[in-house]
Amino acid sequence: MKRMLFFLVAWPACLAAAQTVPGGDLMRFPIGYLDRPAALRTDLGADLGNPANVSFTDSSRARLGVAAIQTPSDQGVSAHLISVSVALRGRLAAGLTVARISVDDLFRTDTDPQTFGREFSYGTTLYSATIARRNAGGFSAGLAARYRRGELGDERSGALGLDAGVLAEHLPFLDASAGLASFLWRPGGDTDDPPTVNAAFDARAFGSDEKRQVRAGLAVSIIDRHKRERFVFGSARYGIWEGRAGLNRADAFGVQEWRGRLGFLLRFGRYVVGVAREENGAGLAPNYQFTLNTVIR
Image (cartoon, rainbow, N blue to C red; front, top):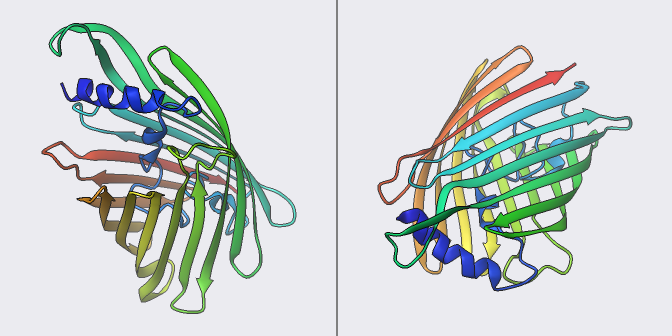
């Protein structure tokens, strides 16, 4: 029943404007950065949260990452991501990312909510190509060209987009980091599907180096005029182990929703394995994310 209600709400919203690509709301799932702010650097090196994240901080030649999010069966949303980036000359880096998010087991209703029609699809796929550069002072900038294709039942459409981001790391004040980026900006896009603006800041609270430290910060995402998200987060790392925790508050049309997030990472050799969990409201089971990242030196 929840999925049918979801369809009845989503269908007219997606058909309201001819230029709106179906599935834009699905891209709000924080795939790849469930336990991290979108605007700061992640282990995957994907460009969804911030195109500047594609840049390299060490002498690695390439990086490959995968991520997946699974929601409870009442929601039926699954998300998958794969990203690859390579180091180029002159501190440049290039990256490719493909993300697919869909809702399973959706059915049309015929004469009443208890009568099921044929199954229909609802999902979106995003393709990104990014170029980024990091200078000697720890400042990175990136530009991503995107193509997003969505489907809702028999409707299929796509649109090109362009996003930019900046990232400043190892600032003199408490080894702080700050990031700012856009997500899903489309030239000439309609007002019903505006881009998201992600901003974040964090700093070292305790510790002497990046392998033994405690960090804390704040992130803000402006989705549109009526929707905002604030994420208070922290992390603690000791050697190959790292734990993350945060509290996310979403404000939409005067209604607030709080979600707790937890993450755990294990770093060994060239690999980083991560598991994250996000609480859901309305009595639903949590969302889970799995990530795997490796580098080629």
